[in-house]
Image (cartoon, rainbow, N blue to C red; front, side, top):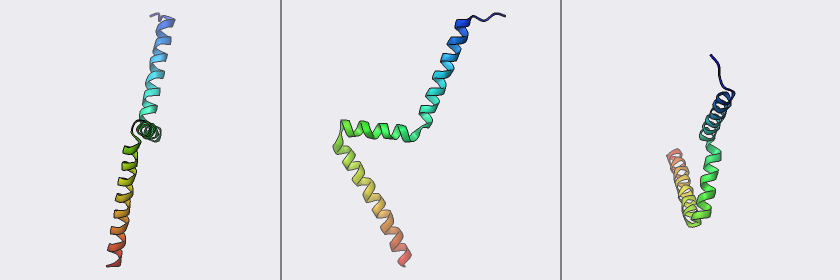
Length: 71
């Protein structure tokens, strides 16, 4: 059984590409930062609305927890 050197190099390149793709897929903070950056560049008003929505949701959760603890 003989293997051509180019086959080995091609297999290594394919493996490296696969590992890079898996690494990228598992790097959630980096992907999130890229999506936020893209949203900021494409539609800054949507980013402001998203930030306000998150702030309202967190504020409502905190208010609900504090209200429940006072009872």
